[in-house]
Amino acid sequence: MRYISFLRPDGTASWGRLHGATVIDLGAQAADLKSAIAAGLPHADGPELDLAAVTLLPVIPNPGKILCVGLNYATHVAETGREQKEHPAIFHRWADSLVADQGALVHPPETARFDYEGELALVIGKPGRRIAPADAWDHIAGYAPFNDGSIRDWQRHNLQFTPGKTWPGTGGFGPALVTPDEVPDLAEQRVQTRVNGQLVQDQPVSDMIWDIPTIIAYCSTFTELAPGDVIATGTPGGVGDKRQPPLYLQPGDTVTVSVGSIGTLTNPVIAEI
Image (cartoon, rainbow, N blue to C red):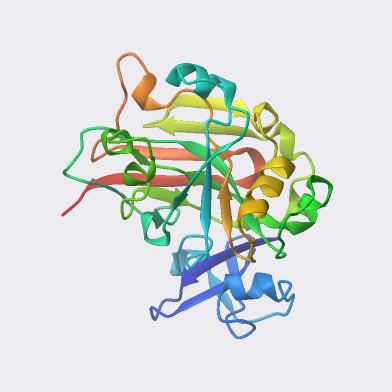
């Protein structure tokens, strides 16, 4: 199944199930997709809307947590010149830093080093603390493409990543939550990023240094994971900041992040007004 969060034509927020170019509006079943995940994603029917008539929202517009894994592909570790550590690097984003599929990424005036990071994101479906790796798959509601847009100069003001990672409107998340049964070959899905059609990142999920069960076990040790929490699992090598010459995003650019059959996230870049 594929689920989206969206605005109806009258501007009210809802969520629903995708069926081709049709949205089954399930807003009467739960307040939002996060609540629906906590309730086990009810399979009821509802009114049908044309997908073209709704405005997409980030897959989970109101996550309690957005945890991001840094340096999780060896190619990215190598291009940054960093030392491989024993444990994952974890930082966070805030919900207002994300836009939906087709939403505009906002280039702040304070930087000339706005970068892309294509990733696979997972959404937690079942709560848990100290989740064993063997049980981790049971805690996943689904997957979606993610763009961990980064303001590189602010990211490096000090040792912590946060100032460069959570500017409003700088990351993408969408288009849909794809349930695990739709992706039996997850490890074979390729994370691919394109800027204006140019392929700049391309690696399979299987190349992660820390796999998904390890990430969930690690994160759930220091915090309780709840339905609707988002974990972005890291970006492959090929980020714009490390290319020669560097490839930073500019107003007028278009970035796409594809994760195999899970889907493609497309975002134009605009200047902050």
